[in-house]
Length: 341
Image (cartoon, rainbow, N blue to C red; front, top):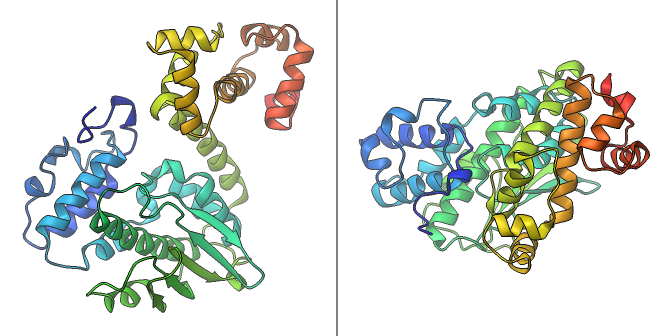
């Protein structure tokens, strides 16, 4: 499979990151056509929120930027323009949460909704909280591309926290797992904190004193509603990745039937052994996906239909309603009645 164009089921993100980068490059005299060359994205599409693009297409624009731009501040400028308001439901869920601690926690939980180019983790220590980027430099074939993505990602984090807090809220330290580049002096300018290179891993550290602070748009009702929507979107996002995405799609196609792993593997023209191996490589299993599909459908049926619990249990392939209730409790911590309200 050519890596230049994404698989159809990878195109799930609005092109806001691409638009921001193309805009920064245009200010340097680089035409949008040049910036988008070979990406499969058309100039007319980048301001259309209904157009869907992939992480791979964004990375292709970044590669073009590395070749065409002579300004080392390009990724920093792009990150500082990516405000949370451009991120749809994900952005609004983060802006309305009730504390900055929630913001960091939910940022990780819903990160898959935000055209993620890097994995992020959040760890709290007694005196500080730390964003870590564990797979930086693991997956990318190009060191230059990875540094570009990290510079953009770090600036974006600083911008987002500012959006949520309603004021400047710089990190206490930024660490980078690579030697200081020639333009190292512009890092603190955009990140607002001391920057250290040749470190063990890429990290952004914050003073834990800020974690109890309330975001400027904190709102209990909105937060609950938006987080519920994000949970549903995360479920849909899973249907768009690799082998696990293909299994989701097969299982969702006939919600009343739950085919075995062998039948699904057969539909995907591979052996069940190959399918198991591919799902393991993506950190999941057939049972986990089948449970997830059942849980999504159960929640949807209970909230949006008047079907009886017995009927829903039968539709989801349970032998009786008691087994269904037990499974629902395991998945959601709630019974059918609680989910109906």
